[in-house]
Amino acid sequence: MACKLTCGHVEGMQVHANEGGVTQTRGGVYWLILPAGYLGSSFWGMVFILASTNLVTARIAAGCFVVALLIVLFVAKNWTLRGLCIGFIIFLGIIWVLQETTKVHILRYIILFIGIMNSLFSVYDIYDDLISRRVHSSDAEKFAEICPCPCNGVAWGVIWGLISFMFLCGAMYLGLVIMS
Image 1 (spheres, rainbow, N blue to C red):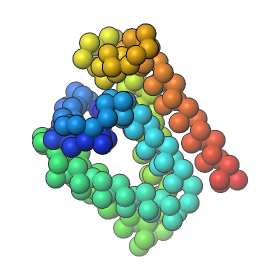
Image 2 (spheres, helix red, strand yellow; image 1 turned 180 degrees about the horizontal axis):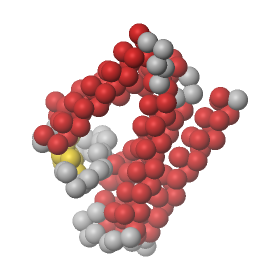
Image 3 (cartoon, one colour; image 1 turned 180 degrees about the vertical axis):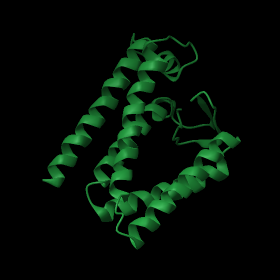
Image 4 (cartoon, rainbow, N blue to C red; image 1 turned 90 degrees about the vertical axis):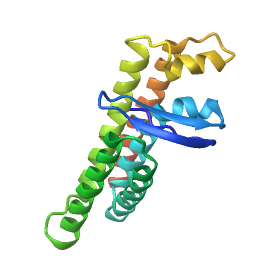
């Protein structure tokens, strides 16, 4: 799923059951919009990994995630995405209540898990969508069309994959440094 952040106006977002999705925008900077779904997911995974190193930052990350899910819930154009949002909101609410009222203190681990899964899925999704099979309507192919360099979509997939993997490795390294 590639959920895009944009400098333009988001007209609609859809998530399909086959792990695909589309975001329709009007305006914006396509140099930022096209890689944002893949690299944005990896970036937020990195943020969540780093936030999991401390209980206060894990609470902040969980709260920000719930707010983002609520926003997406109202922007979503289909029930698959709405259902995912509602499920994650309920799940995080339960985890938060357990964190605050019982001896089950797993919020940091849940935030770490979400961060790692976001980062790993971003790397996998880039490989699956942009490198292993060539889709002429992919974000990387569209990026190659507007880029003045001679790279094709597969080359941009490799570049984005390396950036995504560096985000994951950097987050793990910094997380270990922060915790030591």
